[in-house]
Every structure is written in structure tokens, then in C-alpha cells.
Image (tube, rainbow, N blue to C red; front, side):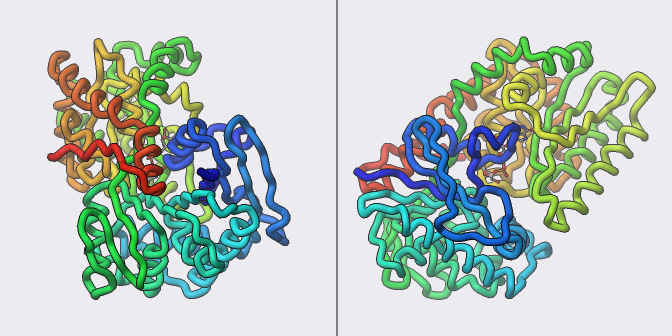
Amino acid sequence: MGRLIVVSNRVPVPSKAAGSAGGLAVALQSALEAQGGIWLGWSGKTSGVREPEDIEFNEQGRITYAVTDLSRKDVDEYYTGFANRALWPLCHYRLDMTEFDRNDMAGYFRVNRFFAKLLGLMVRPDDIIWVHDYHFIPLAAELRQRGFKNRIGFFHHIPWPPADILFALPVHETIMRNLASYDVVGFQTEHDVENFAGCLLREGIGANLGDGHFEAYGHKFQVGAFPIGIETRAFAEAASDAKKNPIVQRMKTNLGDRQLIIGVDRLDYSKGIGQRIEAFAKHVENNPASRGKVTLLQITPKSRSEVPEYGKMQREVAELAGRVNGALGDVDWTPIHYVNKALNRNTLAGLYRMARVGLVTPLRDGMNLVCKEYVAAQDPSDPGVLVLSRFAGAARELGCGALLVNPYEVDSIANAIGRALAMPLKARRERWHAMMERLLDYDVSQWCSDYLSMLKGTPVQRTPEPAR
Ligand code: GDG
């Protein structure tokens, strides 16, 4: 078998990616470390000229990182523009926020051609190529046009929308045609697979050949759901070891006998942070006895600040947290600790463990790794409770133990917070065990090997999604 070549927009070259937040990087890093391979993507830097020869290689352990700069125009059109102002909101069912700009679209396809050229320089005939996320949908079609016959797979980390939403995208047909050029198209959940199949069948674009096989535009390919996971055991250990971490210790002293609720999200409108803060405020208003007894720690590193919608949201969330603190706080009690920077991963693990409630309420999320990390980090003898949005991909797997909420309904979240804080130890343990069992059973290495088995055409040892 040849080498594995992974392509994703950002590549967390170890020495340069301290404190970075983002689910894809976290998951792929652990998967590739086990497997070994080449990881190609954007360096995160802009420079005037970019030539395929300028690619920078950096070998660390079993991974060779290969990164390239992009021009300012490339970044504006491909990344900030089409990927993050069209595809991201569209896939998160936010047509109201979706911007269709012709120049951005052209830039997106241009940068994909550029990456196909880069790949063309390094690919050997028996290499396997695994492309990640919405930034690179056209990559396989570009490679096929150049005559590459390698096995090429695509994994979509974010939700796949229903046909009525996708078809609002002017280039939706090209996008569907591009996806049909892969050998395997992977999604997070069966629900995404159903939406994708619906898009294929709606206008007679393709045919369902059964058992996950589809045909469209003259290509046959496989489609499957592969719920991404975390390194469950390693994360649990990190959380347990974090007792000695100075930030964790300071937080513990600070907290005293107050109960901690934790929220951790990139600052993104898909994460439902505003509704969550309002729900927390409502819980305190409805339960006067909880005043001074509970703290919400919301860790929210800034993300995509160059996209205007994100800048606006940064101001709104900061104002909201400030308003709630002003209205409900006291001289000796700040209800919400709002932290706008990325923390070290071990510190995060220790803070999750300290929290009685993990509050994860995205309006729409492909999977959501934070909820899985929260569960893995708990102390088995005294675990906390997960409050989870029914619209996170993870709801299917963790519905066995989490309190599922409708993230649009502030009252529903507020009630769940009350229930979680009051839950007796026995019930907390039972719920936690059910979730932890699933996370141990299906972790990120299982996700990776299942996907790659399908891509290599070997039998897949699938652990099916639990039925709800
Ligand atoms: C996309 C999809 C899908 C957050 N703050 C800090 C920090 N993080 C880490 C978390 C977690 C990751 O970032 C976030 O992952 P999520 O999965 O929750 O969300 P997205 O970034 O939107 O990820 C998502 C994922 O891709 C994988 O397929 O699950 O649905 O949207 O690991 O811990 N890490 C550190 N400091 C922070 O302050 N070190």
C-alpha cells in the first residue's frame, strides 16, 4: 500500500500551532500520529507570490507537514469569502447569512486548482488521498482531470443541509458533481447522509444503488456516516493529571463551594452562545437560591475575525455577558467568567473535570467534540452532567446519558441546567457510564480506521450509530 496523504485547509505544524482551537485539527492530529503520512494545507500566512515549488516541508515523528502560503486575494476569496461566508453558513442551515459572491466562487475553484497542482507534484500512483472539509470539495475532480487514478476520499466535518437549502447555492450542481468524483464521501451522521442522498435524488442527479453505493455523473462512489471521536483514554488521563495544573488549582480556590458550569466553543454563531448565556441568566432568575452559588465559565477563543459576521458576534456576546453580570452579579459574585482566549489543552481537560455541568448547545453542529471531551474528562466516582443540543451530531451517540435540549428554546436550556445541578450522584453515574462506554468503544482511531478501510476497499468494522 502507498502512503496516506491528508489535505485540509489548516495544518497544525506542531511548533507553530500552540493553543490552536478547532475540532478538525485536534482529531486529525491524533489519527495521523498513529497512521503516519503527509499532511498538506495552507500555512495560515499570506505572501505576494505563491508557486508550487515554495511548499515548505517539516517532518515530525511519523507526520510530514507540507504547507504553502496563499496570496491575500486567495485568502479573501477562497477562505474568508466562499468557504466561510457561503459554504459554512449554508451547511449550518443559515441561508440568511449566506453570501453568494461570484469573485469568491471563482477564487475558491482557483485555489482548489492550485492545491491539485501541488498534490500532482507529490502523489505516487499507489498513494491514498484523504481530503477534509468544505474548503476542498473540488479537489478530486481537479485531480481526475489531470489523470490521477488514486483512491481519493472526502470527509465533510460539518452538517450537510437538505436539498432545499443546498439548491439555493448557485453552483450547487458543480459541488454535487465534484463530490461524485471521490471514491468515498463521508459524513458525521446518518442524518447528513440522508440529506446528501436527498440532494442527489431530488433533481435526478444520481441514483441510489443500495448499501451506501451511489452513482452520479457517470461515477460510482460510496457514502457513509463516520461519527468523529476523540482520544478518549488519553483525554481522561490528561483530565485526571490536571489536578496539579496551576490554572486549574487557582480556579478551584476561586470557586470555593460554588458549582461550576462550563461552556467551550470557538466564537461562532453556530454554537448558540447567546441563547446559552440567556438560559443561564434565566436559571439564576428562576432560582433565587442559586445566586452566589453557581458560576458559568465560558471559554471562547476568537475565530475567523476577518469575517464581518464574526466581528459583530464578538461584540454582541461580550455585551450580553457584561449585561448579565451587571444585572445579576454582586460585590462578591461574578456569575459569568467570559474568557476570550485559547487555553492549553491540559488546562481545558482539568476545567472540564471540575465542572458539574457541561453546557453544549450549538444551534447546528456537524459532530461537536467539546461534549465528548467533557464526558471523557469526568471523575468516574463523581461525574458531572452533560446538557447537549439535539442539533449537535453527537446527540445521537450521547443521547443515552445527556440531557438533550432544544438550543433555540431558552427555557428548555434553563430547565435542563436546574435539573443537571440537582441531579443525585446515582443518576449522574448511570448517565455518565452509558456515554463513556460509547466513547471508549468508538474513539478517533476507530473513526480513522473505519474510514480508511472503506477508502481502501477493505471490509469496514463499523460500530453503528446507536438508535435513538
Ligand atoms: C468542526 C465541526 C466537528 C476550543 N477552545 C479551546 C480549544 N478548543 C478545542 C476543543 C475541541 C475543538 O477545539 C472544537 O471542536 P468542535 O468539534 O467542538 O467544533 P469545531 O471547531 O466547530 O469543529 C464540528 C469537528 O470539526 C470535528 O470534525 O465535531 O462539528 O464544526 O477539541 O477542545 N482547545 C484549546 N484551547 C481552547 O481554548 N487548546
